[in-house]
Length: 254
Ligand code: G
Ligand code: G
Ligand code: MN
Ligand code: NA
Image (cartoon, rainbow, N blue to C red; front, side, top):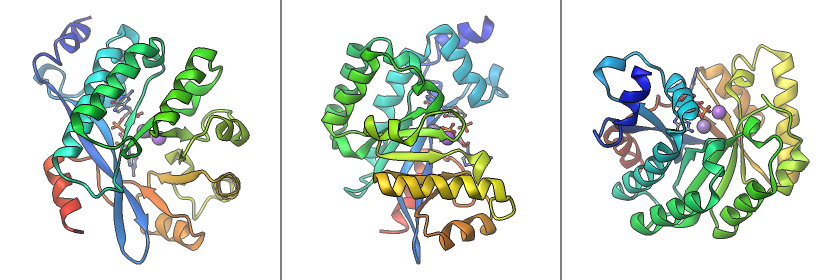
């Protein structure tokens, strides 16, 4: 409850910030093609709270709705301020609760785009596979509205839920992020390899882009390269970092 009270005031006290972790295209050279925004909380009392715990409390208390709006506004403003290439995408995570009031989310999205000047296809919204189970008609409409605007939709933590790829294609997802549990030691674990191979084969047929999350080692990267799997995210390239160091990373390749 104490945590909840503090978190309630986090926005007005300017304690929330976003870190950025690059999406990497694995070519001859490594190229940053986008980033995921990840929430962090600067609060002395709750220094040791992980982002996962923070999000869980925000979801339980409903605070995820105002926090999610703040994330939309902040991520788009941050990224616009560092002048990314036109092809750069900023991805952020949506919680299921943010779908409960579609009008509110639509307004937040339109405001963020207008105020930042980013183009809709520079914004990518991540929804976890588990949040997509049993979608109501209201949410399906909302996803269609998002797609019609030209915003990219991606499915997060893929492989941990039960959606079929066919279903994903019907909902017009652009990108699928393979959960890091399947990428870990993929060069050693046959079962992970079989699953990931199947995901890549099908997503290719359906024209859905894929990112392998949680790349930590050279061996994991090499495996993906051999299979011609194009996009990666993980500590091997960069941990999530504040905007300033992220801008330096991005500027290095200009
Ligand atoms: O950054 P880290 O790996 O610690 O994130 C932990 C979890 O919190 C991840 O599942 C991530 O998707 C989630 N998360 C991080 N930032 C946000 C956010 O802004 N909104 C939502 N809904 N989830 C987030
Ligand atoms: O659930 P979601 O995929 O949104 O969570 C993203 C989280 O994964 C980030 O908060 C980040 O801290 C974490 N992450 C990113 N790269 C790696 C990695 O290479 N290894 C591990 N263990 N975690 C990672
Ligand atoms: Mn994510
Ligand atoms: Na994920």
